Length: 305
Ligand SMILES: [Mg+2]
Image 1 (cartoon, helix red, strand yellow):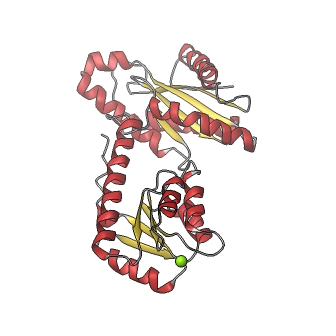
Image 2 (cartoon, rainbow, N blue to C red):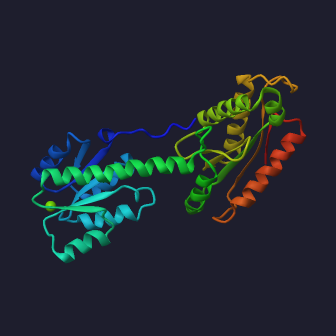
Image 3 (tube, rainbow, N blue to C red):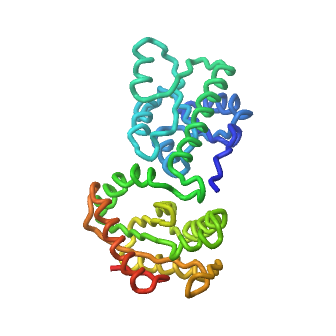
């Protein structure tokens, strides 16, 4: 089942970015009872930290040499992977122009200097609360509630960005469409409760075979699953498909109404460089043709070409 993110504010990481040593210490001391604090002294370090660790919130000094807080904020808000991190400015200048600049650069809030501890704590708490709620909503929107795998919404949202990236890097995209063999008979024989359990077990096996964080395992339909494998050529895609089909076979989930007396998968797989951001349907059609052939050939197998 889908485990909703039950993170607490205390577990959240706040990245404090300030060129002034004393200021960094003051801010992190104020926030240290509320959440986890990490400090850096300049914007480039903040950017590289965000790319590696993804904090839950940034607290950023506006005035810093070289790259100031406003430009750091713009860089964060223009990065597809980082733009959901909220950002609070710390500013010594509360003129109308300065406030406008904070909002226009994409900041979520600001606190004026000298910092009043309780104000900073409340503003940070509010931003973290809405971040946690937004994260939970995202989890609900992009995951299948039974298996916890990603769902079609995720695919729709993610594919244009993924395909752009792969085209830019001239990398292939591997796609595998799986279907549980004789699943209707399974439900008819064992009942829907066991049918759901079967789907959960198969989903878990798929999840275990994802290579890295970029591989997406998706519940595509009732008993259909989809693996989206960036950078996977035909050989790698076929191998992953075969491993999963074998792993489901070896798990030996009883299904008395089949030749193998167990639950099996069929898979249609392809890898291609011939795609663009509108070609998802075409790729899925090709995978589906291969899946159909795997079914015709006797099921419990992979067709990849
Ligand atoms: Mg400063």
